[in-house]
Image 1 (cartoon, helix red, strand yellow):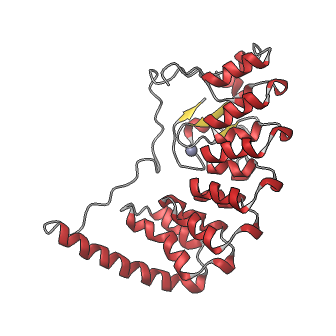
Image 2: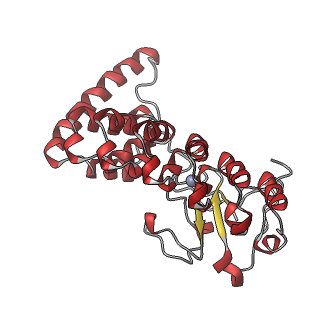
Image 3: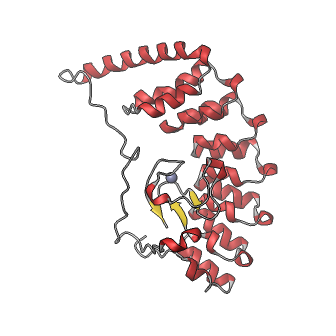
Length: 277
Ligand SMILES: [Zn+2]
């Protein structure tokens, strides 16, 4: 990582062959900066293996099952760029196992109770994937699983809790709260047995949530920061989850207009504020 070089817009002009493109991808992952004619299967495969979200910039005709699988195994969220005909249950399962939030890109007919339950319980934050669970599959158990982590992780951040409850059918909310209360009571009891002197552990707030803008240490990577006049050409890649925001394009999937200065914003996908740009 120490020798990582970020390909800049200026460098892009220098890519005049597929070999150079491959070299650029081997030292970075910014496929969107490789001229389209040099996005060969080899270049694209190397890019998605580094960052699954680069699948978005792979020419449609090169999106083979193998290439898409490599992307999804790297980042489940890459499911959003997979051609519909390749979205089999097996594929969707692999994606959701990596990232519960990938449920948003699963075709409705493939959203089974099992897949949805997995989506909300794989990683704690994935409880938010409840948003993409079909209403008829929102059972008490599934909704409870989605909110349970709020306590499991000992990180009760109000805004996320509120958001998750917003996706629970109104008629189930009271019941889910009751289940959570008894769950918390049992956990507290277990805890007080282990730590007799401490009744309740302090609530640790997850640092990535509402994290202030932290500039990446210069030593970590060679970041070429472009002047604000070139903002329209800027691309931001989240170093936490690989999410890509291209300033000129915006990201309608997350309701974001073009031209946003992401340096001051958190990643819409993982809430991190560590960008490569
Ligand atoms: Zn992210």
